[in-house]
Length: 286
Image (tube, rainbow, N blue to C red; front, side):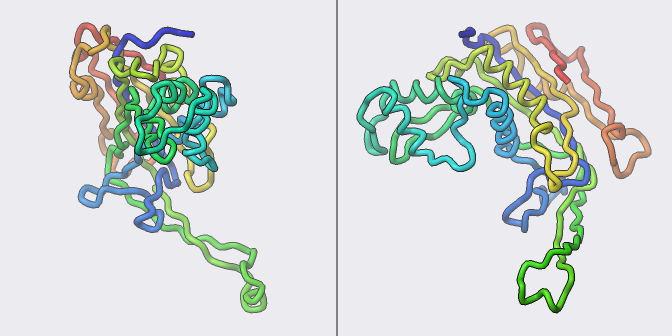
């Protein structure tokens, strides 16, 4: 097994969407999420974590140590119970202190727990883990203009309507184009707290980010593409520079005379390498 990570990381993800809904808001009829004050688009951390989990599940195929805790169709209390069954221990409930061995077992067996952490203090108590990897919300570089597109369908839903109409109407919500920026953090100081987040795990994280959109295609999401994965690797566990200073070294702006960006080439991405201090290594994965 590879060693626990000894370096702090920050990373910046740039991705774009064309004619799709990157993250629908259930409070707004599934319209693309938006900051109502500025008009900038938003994609939640949960949305991106879902894509990372899905890639890991596809790649690792339930390999020992790489199961996925949060996935469609699972009951979380049943996931927790697996640890007590494997350890041949009596199940602890939410009013009891969780078994330390059970907490460790969950981290060792579920990749997303030791990566992102989890609250496992429900009826079957496996404790709470603060994961070393955290993501911010993604925000579009410029304000977005969501559109509602009317579509038609030749199939009729109800038999009683078949004599009265030949088509039915529907709606799709899209963003014509938007470039989003998301910031992420990897804490080496939290990597060995039950989770044992390793060098192999962090490499799998980068691979998952690089490929997360390639296995998440749908008509509703349009064309989503990862444009940049920029990693700042510190020479120490606690880090060698403030995270915000490193993120500020990446400048993203529209090209002159571009009013409504419609593709990635309408932007200029510039990394001011002279602002990156000694003790921090810049890695451009994409």
